[in-house]
Length: 223
Length: 288
Image (cartoon, rainbow over the protein chains, first blue to last red):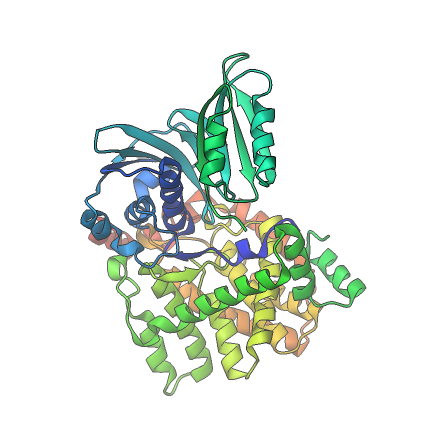
């Protein structure tokens, strides 16, 4: 049986819908973890069934809650609008079209005090599971169930090996690793799901590797 | 390894273990968590389930649209007096109503298997545990038994209303709860699965027709009736009623029925009571 019992009886969440409430909160929280900087404003572009049915399922409250760092089981989820206002964070919702194979999609754009923008796109897959599909222009597929490192690099020999050596040297076990590129010799990136949280010094070390362009870390605690 | 009920029962027989033990072994292997850690997770879930089943009994919750505000309290007060089916059945209904009311009011629940059907398993576990003086430890084993039944539906059919209608949500929840109730009353493993099969057969074909698209009406009512369905199905199995159709074939039949249902009856609010004149009037009143 490859279905986890804890997925059958779960998630523990704030109602009313695992896809439209719990999934939305998780999506926005993951987006915030990826962005990982202070922001003044956050815009939520809603696609598919999120756009048409978000009000009835409190998808809007859940998204704001997630952006403010709350989990899908946080009982303050219903007060997320007030909490964001108190912390001086503006938020807006707008309908949009996001190319995706999934029904419930969102584009979450963070705006900092200088007006710099950063967006994360993703989908709620049902049962509280999510998929991150785009990180500020970087197309990816990220379930965000484990600590994950996303390295963008120049497509040359040795980079992937250097990256995995650093992880191994720091005692971080790699669970799943996917490497892809736009075209040969151009930009490439790898998504690495790890068994352990990736500490700040390791992230810094990865950034120093030759030909590495950027490093994004999503420190989701897995089991 | 097992992928359906038949293989699960074979493993139980071969290893001299109960359904919950074989399922727990599998979970440990699958997740890489320790046995203790998995049990902790189940214990936390059981606690959250009980909290949501009790929360609205005396305190009405404010829900979006107000369609199910106070449904738990209404049934709970009634359960204290004269009734047709008795205090116990009415109390179990109140527990299920409570979970649904908490869910609709942005309270904390544990999806089992979904948020829309989150009241059935908790109501049955708590109702039987209290009424039949079953230990918490055994109730926890019953929750794992219920999860094992749910996993078989998840793997071989569906637990999404959008794919299979309400039979896939409240039907599966009742099926899970029936197995749990039978286990708590000392039934053998195959009898537990008979109970699960009876509960699904009782509501096979049930449509998902949420009024105004909200997880409220008829969801709350179907959680209450689903909990009672689980109890009577367990009683059928305990009485020794013969299950002529093996559980795996019930699961398969339910999946096929779900596919035959038109999209209008699968969580789109485009059929059933959602499109009745009264249902449409409620939609207008809430969303303008």
